[in-house]
Image (tube, rainbow, N blue to C red; front, top):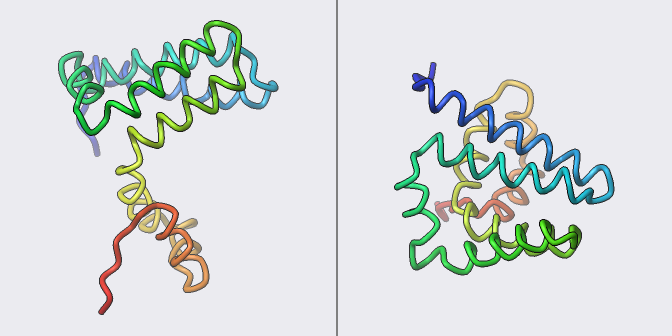
Length: 139
């Protein structure tokens, strides 16, 4: 069980609500209002989960600058009523910022009861590993 402070619990709620609104914004044919609220909730949630100083450090690391700029430009485009172009640019930024976490996410999902056997299937595992960037030893 995860032990979270009250602030971190609010952060998880805000981040989850941002992800839900992001999904709903895409399903509503890139509704700019939903995508704008999703971005705001996501950023507030990240700040509450890891703290403002660590958030600022994460987004300003030299190897993350390209992703941060793409993410910020995507948010600006969405806020200026260009939701589809903003979504594409923001998706590139999210992949550049959080791409290294996909391997960890795949390993976690493989330990789940329902989806784990599917992701570990010999026909599916190499494809998922290649997409997520999981490093497999040649032995």
